[in-house]
Image (cartoon, rainbow, N blue to C red; front, side):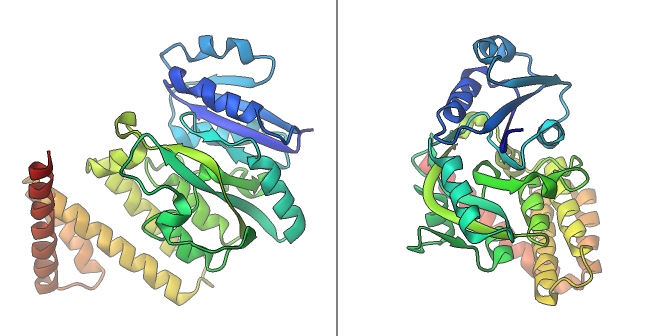
Length: 317
């Protein structure tokens, strides 16, 4: 059996998936298998992967979404470790080797290891994930202190594309939540932090595509799609109901994040003149302890910031 199962979920990325596969084939660590889960592609993905069929396991399924594709890969995996690579991203050759060395040094308590990442395709993005998240430590590797603080930060330091995790920790029913369309990665990481310790490799061993036109899930959320907002709501509500022994401060942080999310959703609905939906969201905020006066002031402030942001964008275009 291979030590590592590399899962590459893909959907209509025939021009990119080959590069992802090749970046895995170039790994200095060789004891792995590659599972490509094609989530219902209608382009020529299967055709471009034909030259690699003797080195990968290719699985086609109906279009069920990223979470379902990743769970299918985990279900098929044979390795002790799982590592997932998005089909538009790339690994540097020493990625797996570096992570496996670190978990061997730190011991069995560490079931998840992540690396630093850099970005390409967008010059406006800060060069590395650790820099963007404010993790400027000089240690080459080590245990992650305060994992929940890092996972819930506005700028992520941990991407699933950089993660090496024990398969036993992400097998059904502990894998990706297929009911949500955004934040499924953060949801998985949050739940993992209750089960294992995280460690890091302070090297940029993953390259993440941030080309604006890719139509990624983050862009779906920014378009204020109701499904995306609903997914975020589901995630926060689920976290609040997690173990009874959750630190009260952490639970309060999640409560505040949910409330903040409702305000963003409310402002968006008002901006689009969807007053009935806005009223329903306001009621959800009231249930969480806010009175009408506070809601009005907060919404007015956020609406002002949103308008200012739009004006700045217009002047900049």
